[in-house]
Image (cartoon, rainbow, N blue to C red; front, side):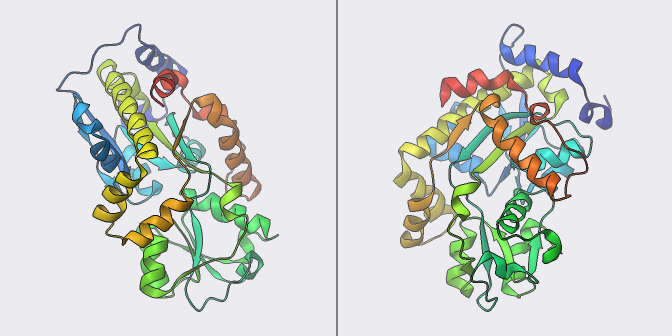
Length: 327
């Protein structure tokens, strides 16, 4: 099957995928089966390692690390990836581009993880002060809809700011060089840059309440239709959910492993990050639908989505049983 055909695969192929995931025609993944899953900030890798779940994986699991959804999208279109951990906007942009990458798992935190961050001299004291500022814009990333929603609450639109189109990997350096006034960042970058160059969060009392921090795992349809790969996905998702649950109940161990040992943050910074970080929650397709539809509506209203989409078309519910059984 050529790349274009598997990316545009329709209901027939997904029906085969659903049957394979549900169990009737399921074959155990053997040691030769390889699953390549795009990671970001090496989060999945460290969750699996710290929780001990990586040792339970009986197939070949590769976790190449990426910086942002757009780079992942290009890799998955090229057939270099089976699945990917992405933010809440990339699956919407993929559908808008005519590319079918069903969401098979949703995980979220009730409070936002993204922050609007300004360099020390930007002078943004309220959201309305964003008018006329140079603001980073990463189209196809979860940062996109977070920025749009913040502007909406200030009565502004994308036309009221100067958008600086950047890749995720360029955001920190753009703030350091003051090439942008404001960028949308997540931890540990917010804390690290505040200590290094004195960046400040844009004051916004509602910032962490209105949009949860939602991420997805999406997959190529032809991978879902492969019985061996489908079983590997089932085992991977079970391990990932258990690892996330472990991080919720072992916050001190997780903070030491990921933020202290890997991200090299000091103990005070780790404590501050974890004090406001909501627990990981894992959702079924039906549970994830309302938020996903809200994101679609925000993007469409802002003119960033050429057509309005029904959120139901983004999800494959075949692995919901795995999510429920392990969360």
